[in-house]
Image (cartoon, rainbow, N blue to C red; front, side, top):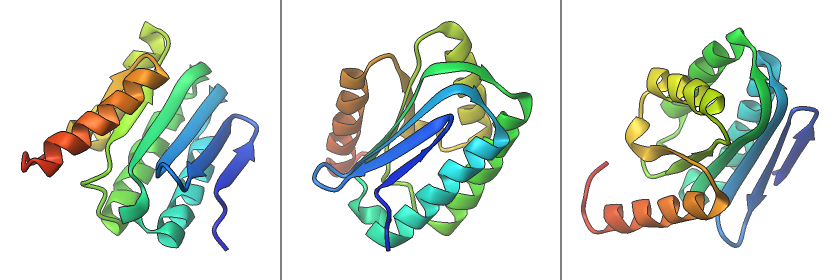
Length: 145
């Protein structure tokens, strides 16, 4: 059975079937264990609903206080692993941050993971949703990404 919700200390995930938006919100200290658990849930969700039914992903880092040094490596490893298993080339990802520290840490992880053309750092929910819609509009018009 597919779980559309995932909650544990430090991270929560929700998939909205109607909009096709997958939302993940981190809080407190991001650790490799937290990162691994949300990727495991995302993997199961992708298998259950089908990646083609996920319209976009919004990952919210605004409540993060600290990124454990090993969490960046875990994010890169898990990102590469899930990208090999699923064709995520049509899945735009908006990464919401609140400050320069969060932006810097998220940018490092994004740069190391690759596929940065479908990911964008933003500062609000509205900006995240606009990025997803604009990304789809430009890609359905035949612009490759």
